[in-house]
Image 1 (cartoon, rainbow, N blue to C red):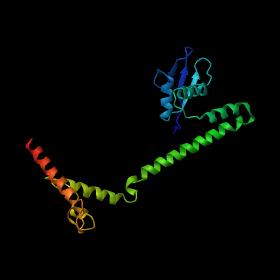
Image 2: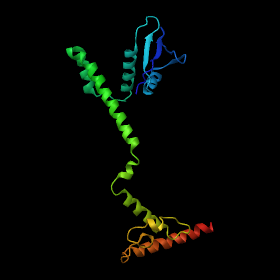
Image 3: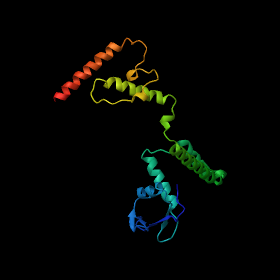
Image 4: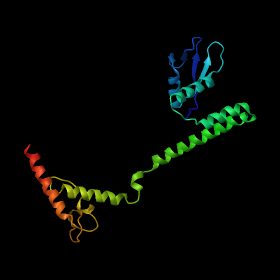
Amino acid sequence: MATKSAPLLIKRYASRRLYNTETSDYVTLEDIAAFIRDGREVKIVDLKSGDDLTRQYLLQIIAEHESRGENVLPIDVLTDLVRSYASSTNSVVPQFLAASFEMLRESQSKLMENMASMPNPIGTVPGFEAMQRQQQMFLRAMMGGWSGASGPEPEEMSETGGKDGESKQPAAEGSDDMAEIRKQLAELQKRIAKL
């Protein structure tokens, strides 16, 4: 998101070193790329001739990123860009690219606004609350033998009305296993208390 203030002026000296006129120090291409990522507009001019070199340096930054494997531009797009220089369509390409990137920026901005305005995206998933209740009941059942174990309050128990979220229906076949697990947990708690 580019700011509407005056662009950051970078002067290129005869030695090809780049000088930031705001901070009065020399900068690298990576520094310039960081300014642009931070939303700053940059203008690079030759100190002696006053020629605008911005396009040349921006293309160099893109070429360096692409050569490091940070590929953003597909081969087909690069090929079409090269073709556009040799055809009469080159007058249409800049406007098309500018409009495409503007649409992309607007879409990203709207997406981020929508994501920020959502209260809790995971909380809106169907069945999330039921899954959360089941998890709480499971933890309570597993921690039942431990003193001071906390779990859901009685009003948070399942709608079946049973103690610790258990159903009023007959015990399931795995209840013996659960009793054994609780017994083992109680024994572990006693051992830890002795330490």
